[in-house]
Image (cartoon, rainbow, N blue to C red; front, side, top):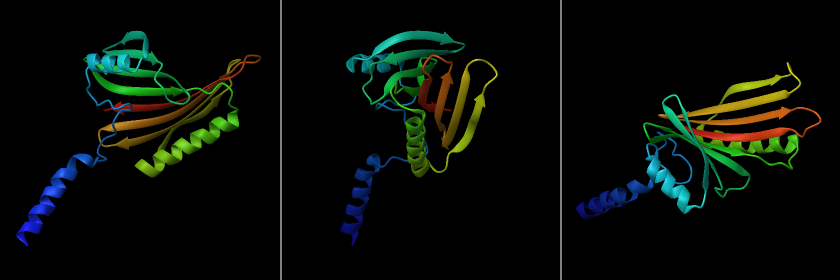
Length: 174
């Protein structure tokens, strides 16, 4: 009896690192919150991604990165505070897609996040027609412990130009 209890404890201890708790979301691409700028840059360099800009905004630094391989991923924004990673925004663009296909994809992503993290909160829904540009913004939010996940669809259209559309998935440490 004692031996089986000891084996059970050992199995639990070995399995524990494999269990991911849902008290926080992890940023994509294997990064961790508070990763240093140097570590993020080294990983991006190893992935042959290109940092196209580095902007300082208030007490934060935002990097725009292109070249990370993921279907439809146009650019990724990495945000640092005190040189530590605090947010990652994935921006997806599909130039050949119709509005219907964008709506379908938003629904698929939202359903996936709802099933994984519970029903998301609608944080933005609106159309703006005050200017020559017709803008649409729809956004949902999931809070998981000390982290937040947001899903947004943005569209801007000014005839005769083709519409600009983007789906963004934002991971943030709070």
